[in-house]
Image 1: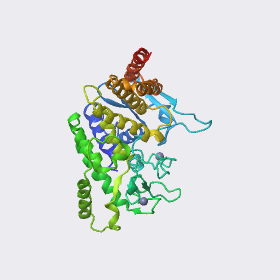
Image 2: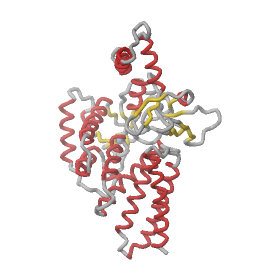
Image 3: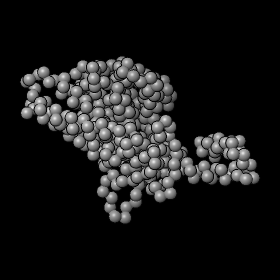
Image 4: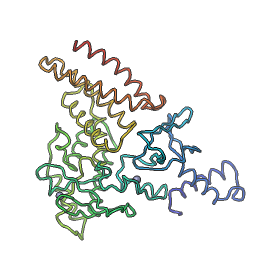
Length: 394
Ligand SMILES: [Zn+2]
Ligand SMILES: [Zn+2]
């Protein structure tokens, strides 16, 4: 227990209790501090405040159970600290009310690791028992043996019937050609890709777009998800990974496998990079190619995350807004081309539809939260653009 993060935090809290409040070990024993700290830590929600985040425990709301595909949507107002649960989707009578204790966009092994580490349980929800994570393929790799025709065939974690994730690392299995990809080799690939991405994340600006594009091109089949390629694939990079892999794994079980491991275009790391690039690509003072690239990332994010967000979602709400604005900018760029009027009319309808959907998903966000503010901006954009398009196409 001494090694747990809870214990380390409890040590810090004990120092404050002793030094600031002057309570002695007889008045407030260390064992009691640990119990209180554990209760707080396991049951608290994180609340985003203006300049920092705080942990808050709610007598009723903290009773909601965890599910990796929760049936509620939660908002917390940072001024009043009032927490509201709404049904994110239809909830059958008698069903448990659930929320999520971790990031929905983490793949199963990552959520399991976090939940075991911080909440001390193994989740056995429907999503955790699904090798494809309900069809999202968030932890999948590409089977290159099957994808020579440039069709993406995902290889997914190999779980036996009703098996969950007591051990984090699982072998991967291609259901088309039956190739087995050993867990160790998959994990090594994920770690390497994640490390490189975290290095890029240290210094994010429009200047780093080429480096992110390069990373994406190195770790997945970009041409399958993004129709407008901004940089060319360099197969040398992939050969380099494979050479390194040979050096790092002295006892390779299946020599051909590791050289074939690439992340699936819907893998969580790929989505992470796509999200960063979607936000990095500008929508003002830029070229039409940059706008189209931005549009590709937004469209891919919406498509890839659809199985994981079945109801109200601020993540999808913000992507929808940004994508609507990107398409509006594309439309303005193409206005001078009279021959395109029909397709522009269609694009305008798409912009309004996206903004409308964004409003539906963001309308519950408190105004003191960034998403609530975005909902307000979206409402006025929707009004202005409706007017602008009706004049333009009248
Ligand atoms: Zn789960
Ligand atoms: Zn295969």
